Image (cartoon, rainbow, N blue to C red; front, top):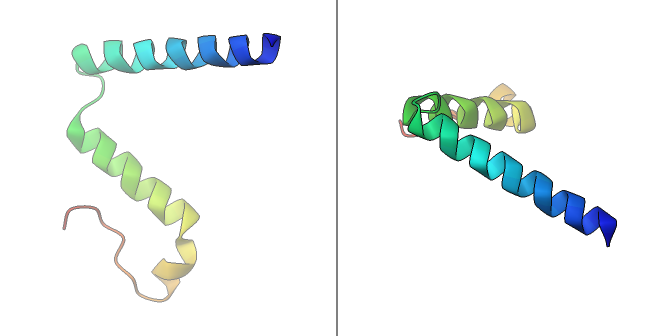
Length: 58
């Protein structure tokens, strides 16, 4: 029970942090696009070696 409560509080804390960062323009769509591309490249690196373009949105 304690684990679920602490996990829930951590999730709420992170969601509020994301909201505040978005409102104060620390997070932008361009930054999120770059992060998404980086995560795709990290997790799907073998596709890059095969010549697949992992750029998001063209």
